[in-house]
Length: 82
Image (cartoon, rainbow, N blue to C red; front, top):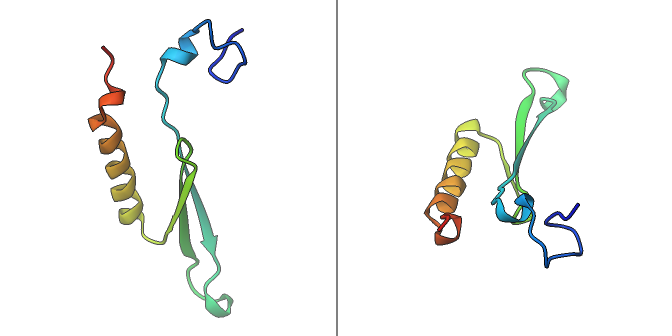
């Protein structure tokens, strides 16, 4: 089977033609200082396609960043199928 990652790029499969954008959101709960109180969230947003990671502590910031990245993808001329 020829895939986008396969060595045979002369033949195109459906995987080559599809634009797939992947994001991974990880949530770590860090213990509160001194081990008391509510654990603090640490978010890690990974843009798999770009190979970037961004750490954030606020969920609203995470959602804003994800929305911004998706809007940029949708506005990109490369994301439009002719």
